[in-house]
Image (cartoon, rainbow, N blue to C red; front, side):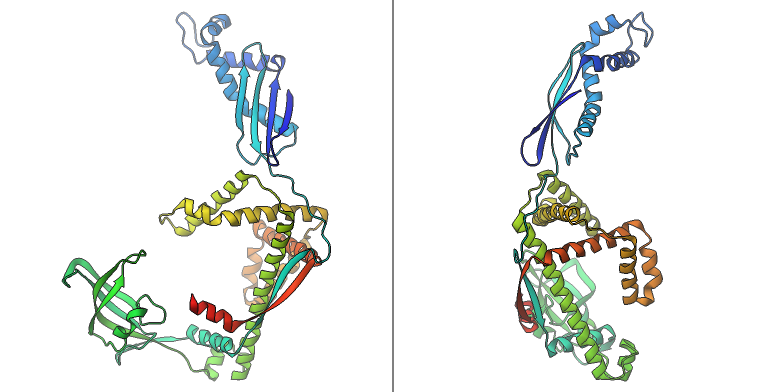
Length: 429
């Protein structure tokens, strides 16, 4: 078998494959015998038809079937011989084959392009590190969230206030205000204000009591359509937050003795969360800086394969709900391209710097997880007995080594971010 390789571009290769008749003759004879068993010809038993009679009538059929049955075999032999790994299905062209002649064809396919690492110097990767400055509001909000986590729900009849939930019946009305038959919705929950879709009609809900009736205009579709409803209150539920006292401390963390201890513990966790947030953003910035500097290419089919997997993941999350696949692909395409670029550079860094994770390294990382949640040790160790989960720990450990290596080439600009500004942005959105 003769093979000629043509580099079309960075990620496309074309193989010209030629197999001589000497290599094919015995296989073609076997194909003739196999074909004869499928043919019924008057005067001859199945499989006993003379070769010349069979070829006279069916030679072109046998040749076509032989080609179809052997493309894949010779193609696989060729890519193995050339030590190539296609990332998509090959396009076959320029096919030639007749009995007593050679069998030739071309196969065009994509491969993972070879990336190269830029020569890294000090300060060649420009990155930003965010320093988060928290304030008393963050601590108060966190304690409020703890109180909400231990809140009780009470049914009240003294009139709804902002934040209450109305359990009600909604009756849709036509344009003249007459109830529409079949459009009555019982046991509906509406929140009074606090960002609910009835926020613009909050005043109509405040003060309502059981059995009260009011009229609301509510959205019925995402495109802005609205309809009138008659609302009849069944019950009003109110979230009752616990007082921050000794009983509350025991609920939250029995090791805390005073409210000051709680405040200090909450602040410590806030600082830790913002440090993690800063670290995650910094590491992302660091890898993006290398991607921008190296700008590796990728095969289009690799992006398509990535997006196909993303679509399948989203389908599973949607649990059978209708899905616009084209929109999912469009949304995730920049993510796919970015991740494929990082994947190629990551692989090069692992090879060039000989980065790896030993069994001991993986065990140390698992032990760290156990130390953080000692009450879940049994579940954690069971989870990481599964090879795929241990592989994830190994990959994360190697990723950390890669980022530690890249950090020595970083020019870091530290930027202070006040959490009050973040809250302001959230409020505006």
